[in-house]
Amino acid sequence: MANSGASTTTSNNKRRLLLLLVAGAVLLAPASARRRPVRLRVYMHDIVGGPGQTAALLVRGPGPENPSMHPGNYFGDTVAVDDLLTEGLAAGSAPVGRAQGTYMTGSMSRPVFVVSVTLHLTAGPYNGSTLVVAGRDDTLEPVRELAVAGGTGALRRAQGHVLWSTARVESPLHAVLELDVHASVPVPATTTTRGTAAAMMAASHLSQV
Ligand SMILES: *[C@@H]1O[C@H](CO)[C@@H](O)[C@H](O)[C@H]1NC(C)=O
Image (cartoon, rainbow, N blue to C red):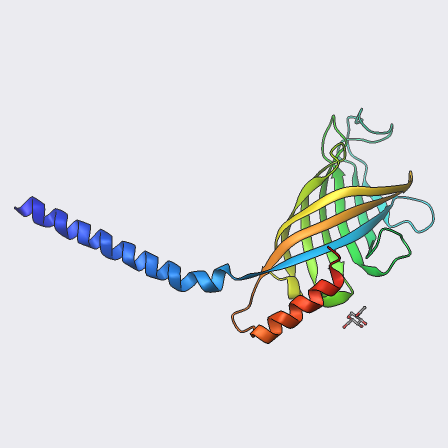
């Protein structure tokens, strides 16, 4: 009898705990699950020398020389960038920000860069906001996936990924990368329906996808 009573109490306690957890999840879900999509497509102009240079070798890597790359590229080479972001593929199209950070030759055998850049947007609905992008850029792959690790301003707590590809090689010194951002940000609890609609309409202005 004593055993059966104890086990009934235990099972009641478990049921109560389960109910509490379910109630907690229901209460928390609407606020934490509401996220607004962020879709952006921008073009990044990486100019490593000559007129209009925006990227410079910061650290000469200790090597060895990477056999998959042009001679003179060493494992650990790190380039600092302040690359122009434009709305379209052409360097002369509307500027929308800068990509600032670094990329490092991160493989001894493949042409792989480990990228860490912050996109500082200076136009459109996210003017003044940043997106933090990090990941592995294996240039042998047509499309690479990097992570959106976070953001600031209107992009605070952004999460998602970037489809990263080489859109055009203008010259050996000037590559144009396409950054296709698929991310989301939490909807603040205080955001009104009208505010969300306005933000979404504004967002559709910059995002061309
Ligand atoms: C972006 O914001 C800055 C600072 O508020 C402002 O001076 C600038 O005109 C804005 N740029 C665009 C393209 O809206």
